[in-house]
Length: 134
Image (cartoon, rainbow, N blue to C red; front, side, top):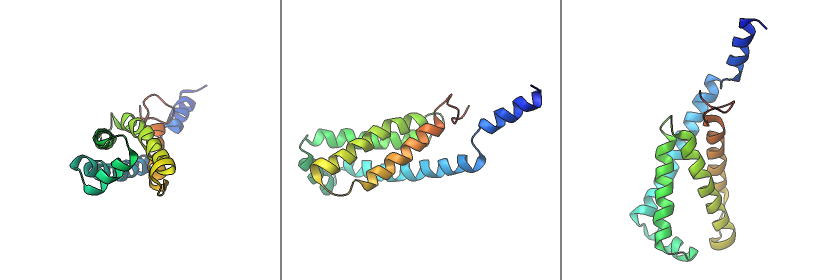
């Protein structure tokens, strides 16, 4: 195999520039939504207090959830921690979906969309993966 063929294969395994830009847009949108959602939980918005009363685990769970959302959002915006932030947020979004489906009602679609976005970021940004940044 020639050196040229090795370079071509290596270049083919890297994410395209369009994919890289798309992922950054997804990361920024996800981070913005989760800073807002987590921030309202941490700030003690009346709506969030009532929501977590309905969940029934206590207000400490509101702080934990809000903290995870804000922390994950910040991690999404740092190139070296984006995959870790996405991996932290994915189970949080699964929990949100389950909570909507079985406890509080309402649509789980926003949490599902955020889950898909975080899974895509984790998949493509995970270090050492064939898709991840080197």
